[in-house]
Length: 235
Image 1 (cartoon, rainbow, N blue to C red):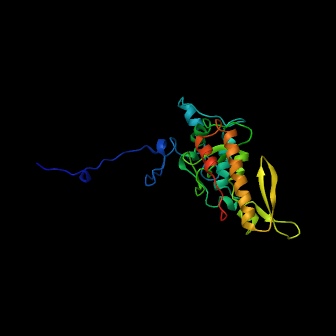
Image 2 (image 1 turned 60 degrees about the horizontal axis):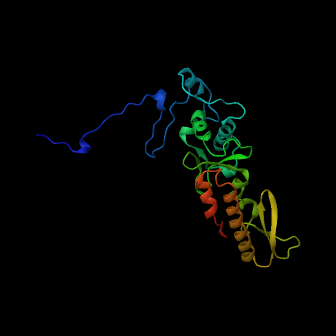
Image 3 (image 1 turned 90 degrees about the horizontal axis):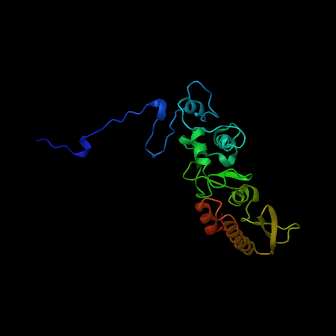
């Protein structure tokens, strides 16, 4: 009796391109959208599309694109990643294939805590500072205040550490922190390291204060990130 090992047995899975997408790559385990890009419509910034019309024709739930919908957040995301006037801060930015379809993004966005608040912003790197791709695994919806404290300002501050700037007149340095939209001066120092330590301590306290304020309003992962956030002098 002939025996077969597992590697001798292969199965072919046929996937309809009109449903699952035309080019499939499972090497990274990337989740794909239910509907492929349309062949008879132009794409948003070369990649984005909206399968809403096809879903409606099939009697499936779908999201609209008007005021008060996730469409603005989706369009801004696609512009940052693929727009013609791309900011240097988004040079390596991309969007996961599933979210090229507005409907897939809207389904995720609409169930996120804080999603439809007036100051809500979509963030891709609070949970992972090295992440450059918009995806369900890495994104969160947060207040503008929280998004601001995690932004990289190295290009604007020069060689000095976070929260440290030269004092007017050239005598010493000043430690400052932006809190609740206002610049707060923490003190004047002759030593840069001491100035940074003042910023670092105030920043940790501020993050914990924000975590307390938004405890039940945000993704638990964001709250945990706030409580464990610690700035380094080389950041």
